[in-house]
Amino acid sequence: MADPTKHFNVNNLRSLFQTRRTKIFAYGFMVSFVACTVFLAFSPSTNSSSPWFTNIFSADSGSYYRSHFSSLFSHLFPNSTQPTSHSAVNSTRSHAPDAGFEGLAGNRTAETKVGSNRTVTGTLSSSKRMEGEKERKKRREGLIKGLMGCDVFDGRWVRVEDDSYPLYPPGSCPHIDEPFNCYRNGRPDSEYEKLRWQPHGCQIPRLDGKEMLELIRGKRLVFVGDSLNRNMWESLVCILRNSVEDKSKVFEASGRQEFRTEGSYSFVFKDYNCSVEFFRSPFLVQEWEMPENGSKHETLRLDLVERSSSRYKNADIIIFNTGHWWTHEKTSKGKDYYQEGSHIYGELNVVEAFRKALTTWARWVDANINHEKTLVFFRGYSSSHFRGGRWNSGGQCDSETQPIKNETYLAKYPPKMRVLENVLHGMKTSIIYLNITRMTDYRKDAHPSIYRKQNLTGEERRSPMRYQDCSHWCLPGVPDTWNELVYAELLIRLNQNKHQPQQPPQQAQQHQQQPQNQQQPKQQPQQDQQQKQQMQPGQQDQQQKQP
Image (cartoon, rainbow, N blue to C red):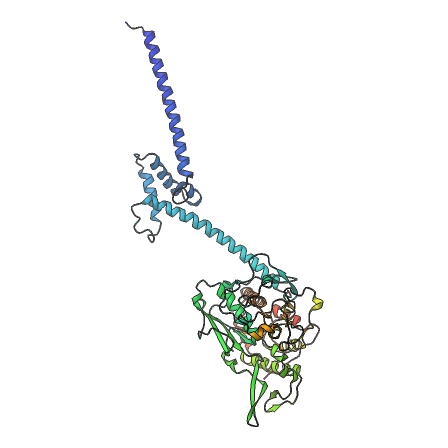
């Protein structure tokens, strides 16, 4: 007979062995389970993230947790059946649109992974964009508020250390005329491209080309004036073109490639249904010819606005200028040149002639421009920097590579600009005066000088001082800043319109019934009043007779 005590000991040992083996197996299984779970949760997949881990941050209901836990469970236990979890996966997918998922119906797990990853990426990127947009708008609103009541023309030029300036890469714009394209013409220095105008009491927002195009979507923006306004026009065309992805949708309406010989040009921005145009009118009044002894005598009709005015009077934004042609010999002497009606003045002071011409222009604007539709700018005189002579007598500026830093070296404010300011004060129409005379006077470094042509002739090489241009500006360059001032004003107007309460119909009707021949200028917005105070400090308004 077997010893019961011995039998008992054997069974105990077997039981003990089985218990230890079970524990080891259990511990090993648990470690493996945890390791697999961590691996599947955090290891990168073809979609750059684990479906379970991803949707912890993107799911908005418990079904997401259940569905992806089901997927994880099926990876670990392929033979197990999970009907509840399977239905949860299908219910999650059933809310997704069918578009974009054609041909993928057999791969539910893959669909869920792709969809979840897209959801997270899209949500995070969208959230960042929204936050960035809010922050940008907040900064922009702060800049706009700062501009209200700020004299933007009182400031200094500061160097920009980052790549935010110039507003378009040098040599990148094919629409710059050769005389303005200093980079293509071999100018070796580029410091003049990296300066930004900084007012003392505020900051001008950097011109955002896309936002500017949105501001003028469906509109006509027209420059009218001399070659300095053409300088500014080409600048704006290049700034806006640089922000357009498909450059083929920016073109001159008549297909022209040069912009000096014709009287008008129009660049079309097709995607925005807008145009940026230029009309040549160096005096804003008509150049005339009178028959004299079988020949023709050239005169300037101070009493007639220039001929093309009917073509742009209905534009949405018009930027006028005149100035440099009034400094030429014929206009400066004023002998047998100025005409009113059939009368030709034997001699007339150029400042008085300038006043008469601007008065004619002002009356035309008041009588023909719809101030409810059209925003009118007038850009002031742009300073020249000829040294050692005039534009046609050896004046030069090619050695200038730095702006003027001490304001005591600035030129005296031109008397013609005082005349302009008086005329603007007497108008019924609200005119935005871009008083850029002083700010441009600092920039003796930014003219084309000898870099106005790419292929100089032999005579030009032998005597380069004879052919310098110290009136116009290199592009990119100073005119870009003029356009930033226009951009800032458009932003101010947009901000004012957003916060301006709608006028009751009865008040609007009463306003329309006011006498047309009222001499007092119309009530101006706060910004216009401040600009007019800047135009003519310490002088009384000079009222102009209405037609």
